[in-house]
Image 1: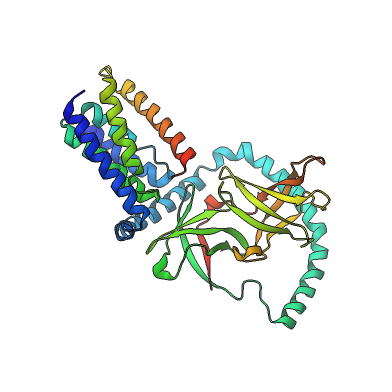
Image 2: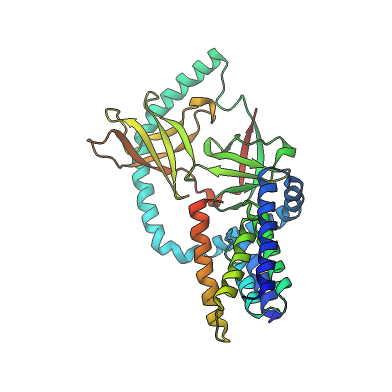
Length: 259
Length: 109
């Protein structure tokens, strides 16, 4: 082999390892912040273009997925209509209790709006530590849980979404808050609720909310709806597939919960 | 050759930001590795494209650069005798892209 090639390789390999080390230590943060200051507006424009293109050509896939979606929505509508009556009574009771205790759902947080610049493994938003965003903060869309801030640079933050394989969210059943478990992300597209006792009454159609246990994530945020029980009665814990309420790749604006 | 590198870099940049896919830089890097006119420029180009890719996607800085220059070394070590055909060269690049995708998903950097 050419000696120049090997020498060049080692020079750039050492340089790459040095860059990795410096980045891990946070020394290259100013470089990242500077680059993101330039790149973020470009990402914003291309994300908007991508969404516009997706909407324009969505009719090409509707014939395949549209019918199935309509069927699912009709079934879901029937289930939700039945629950609506009960929800109305619970809302009244909830409002009275909150008034008595002086507690709000998300009222103790300030909601910082953030534009979504892109969604890959992580969601990239256009707010960072300069805006008060810190790692660990919860990101929501209306009352739906989106994810947690994984890293915040000066003007850009990276959000680990609920569907991320490393995501674990303490949750509870919306109908019976004594049913508690953990929702794990799967392959960046699905959710599974686990660690629920076998004797608990978890059923398809149940709404899954964040429990706020361990103080990791704000409580009472909607995560999704149970679509299918996966486990067998002989398994140690009950496991179920949870269908997220929102399509993360379609979001254009989210809100970071600031204390 | 430089025309292909420029075009594929621009197209790849658009694809990267539209689809959040980091596989595109391997195309200009791979083509430059095959047809580039200077060893220093080849490795330097691969290094800079790797750093840029990580900056845009939020990955650990330097990881992609390390992969790209390793790819160039593999090409040199194996003395891969490609036919002077764009299809063959892009096919080899595609193999490296698949390897990169597997590494990223296993080690999650």
